[in-house]
Image (cartoon, rainbow, N blue to C red; front, side, top):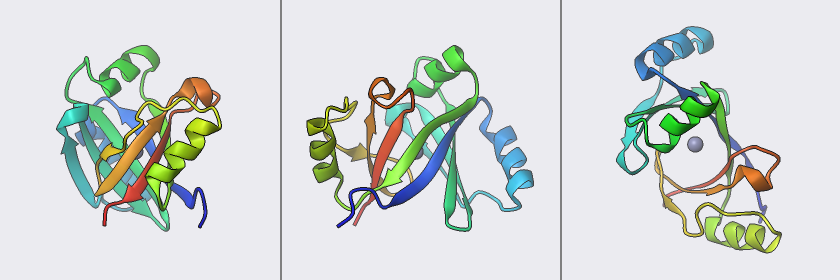
Length: 136
Ligand code: ZN
């Protein structure tokens, strides 16, 4: 079993989900295949699929939410890289032992039918890392 299978998607923080959907549809030549609100994160997401790659757009529904804070601090742009894993709990345990700082020690329910957990950018050269595992 691999630790990390592949990059599952790139997450991009945007201010206006409708405007960004139109822009990325123009850029990629495909419409988003899914739009979904994750209320626990105060975020609306939309997903594009290009070949084997996915792009996730994230817009905040609340300035005090994680994406709202990110945009206030850094502006729009790449927010995280998500890696696909087979066994998210095992990977979290492994990465914690390796000294990575976990934001979520227990995976939570994310967008696009995934279990997700984040690793703090302080421990990954400034890049927020998401692990995700397809829900069975
Ligand atoms: Zn993501």
